[in-house]
Image (cartoon, rainbow, N blue to C red; front, side, top):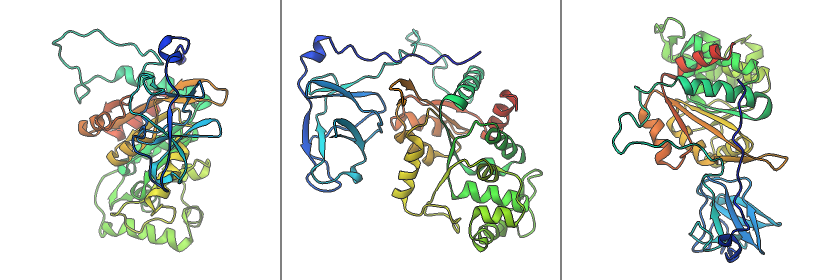
Length: 362
């Protein structure tokens, strides 16, 4: 069964609510990095702004940013990237009162009629996710050739032999277009390829090795000795794993640093805002995003990812966003932070990726 994308239904701008609306007010940024008072903050939904009598869609949106009118288009910018004099949309209403319209139901997602009192309405470890897997197979098969699939990964994958192999098969078969992670995912994956351990434990037997707590540090040190990951892979004869597969198939990966990092590996971005920029570069064209076993990276990417994408031909399509974690807290926290379109799957991510690979016939 092939995926049928829901068509996007744009607002009917001939209705009185739109024709009678005033133009959106624009205020100049008073200095670099500072928005004018009363600025409008963006959401995950399509948003339109009436400028010069025309309703303009913000094509590349991001939550908690501001709308800047420039060159006849609406550009969505982080506060830190504002320049003095930028024309920022001002107004905090969402139903045309100030020339701003937020369109939350453009994809007409079906809603269920529920009893006032009913059991099992939230997602938890007791939820059956069979239909979610079936949908995900369809989404991934479609976006392998017609979209961009971005994976946001915590280090848990690197601790298991089968999970590493399953993800490598996804890379090899075109289901991975970018990877966003931290130092730990790459470090322990390379440790697994180099020394067959992750944090000193054998990745298959899970038995701790003598002096194994040195292994990840030795791996980082050796990568630095060779001058980088690609040089390390070649010099040490590395032939398996997540990072190896990304390097082999030229899949971009962005490693964002944190205060707790060991080493870190040479490609890790120590400047958090540079890492954020690189991550957003990969998210700009993403049509499916899967966040797995990483609370902070999941929330960060959730904030960067709108519920829609404007394709090169002007078509507006839905973005599929999944959060997979053994912790219900992480899955639910995304919604608490505004990523309302995220679908949660509560399970062990190592089992998840193996099941996913098998379900795709890999």
